[in-house]
Length: 231
Image 1 (cartoon, rainbow, N blue to C red):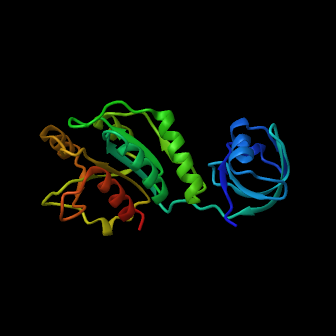
Image 2: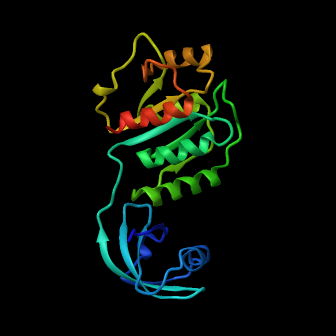
Image 3: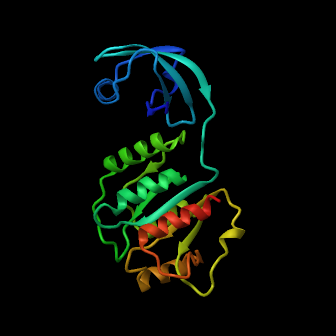
């Protein structure tokens, strides 16, 4: 039987056995999944801790959980910042979900000149990455921030993260030669980077790389580059 995983930010409050009083989670366990005593669940706190618990007792208001064993955490191999231009409709949700599954650690929505959208609901985005982490088995939760302009985020990250730009350029960096453990990658909007943004990247001396011989849709590029960086 497949074990269900649930994110519970209890941190240091976790113990060998404890009573759970999370109303929403208990509703899901009782009404949706119909859990019963003696069933097992995996809990993780988003801080690299995974534990297998047995449900000793469960009611609509509380559940008594007993620790079975500690589990080995599953953490992405690299610290990846995905800096993607905001997209329209549900494409942002798709990027958040799939790139969480692949191993992105930090989601940074960018306000580019040709961004298709400027509004971004951070609370909704955080729920998406939590659900994706629960389902894919990773032990940490990616961070999600408010939309930011290019120059602002470069100023914040340039000292601690190796930054690259997805762009079909003549002088492109070979990603296979990239050995840094902390990487940030800019993925542009459907219409591509504007001339002024390209000049900004040049002034900032950011490295380019050609992701593909063909022109990819923005959401496809986000998934493709994440896969390449985590290989």
